[in-house]
Image 1 (cartoon, rainbow, N blue to C red):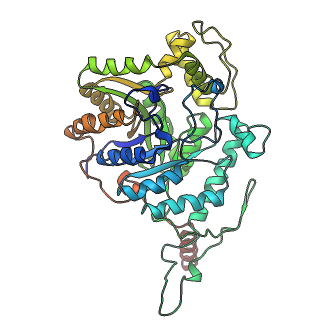
Image 2: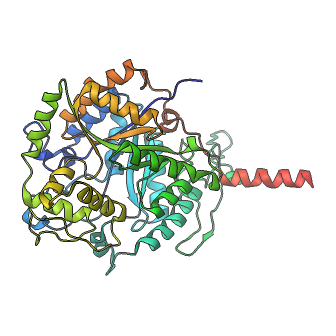
Image 3: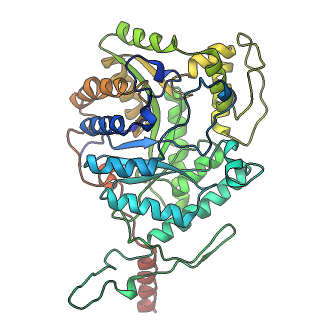
Length: 454
């Protein structure tokens, strides 16, 4: 059996992850809508043998307080599935994980969209399932208020089940396309879902053949109690945010420990914490890179960032050099709000100190240091039940990704921790995830077995 390897996702928003990334002299300020830029960084990530490119997505132009200043670099970016369809034709092996909401999208349209991306990319699509943490989206979809947290997850469970059922509408070999006989598809291999549930009534079948992967890879990022249970039930990859090895180990064991109740094995769910690496050939060079980015943060941008991560609570009226106030629990981004408050209390941060702390990674793990130091840290988490891989968050783009591919990937390969070539052609093959069976075929097989046994 081959040695377990680190999995890597490249989380690539426009100009980069740092709150001031777009102001960096070497960043692509218009990266969010620059297809040439995205082509370049996608090909760089593939050259670095990353498993995936990942994009988060929002359904509103604002993000917390402060957007009216015009200084907050948020919004104005491509819709992920559209972008990934274009990038799939200039890459060959790297996968594409796009975010789409179960709260504001429709199961049939979403199933069709991701099945199409999987066909276009020859089996490299993944769906990051979100329930939408920001209440700002509600007004864009005819709602006066954002659904509460528990209701969003209740809808999400049914939504994911419907989407997976629609992906199984056609058996793998249903489309014969026999020119001689005129038979385009086998009617016996066409299945109507006929779902009637609490939130949805969907007949089917989907008007796209079954995806090459069977199902695009299902990813989830919620870390609340409800989110962890949802991931254990439905997800194949989970993106998460932890600050220390001990916290990451606790999360890893918690979520993996929930799988058995759903008839799943630990290897069927990959846990990939976010990491924000500032890489230098020396410690001093890395610190200089980090301090340069930090110096570009405007106070109003930092406060707006905190307001968004704190569940949409406006912090602009508080003293920036005073303590982080006690905040009421909201129905928005529960796990991230809790993480922000935990960081503030542990370090006794003022508001300014907190936004400087989170400006790069927004609560994810930040490592600033030499190639050897960062490789040591990733290796420790990977080898000590804290991570199956990492969702890499370059500080600015393209330079932060270039540093990772050119400096850190060779070191991980030298240590035998990372691949030297892709294992397969599909995202599932490269992640080591099994291709799911078709539910209609499996039910028919089970019924036949029972009939024979009787």
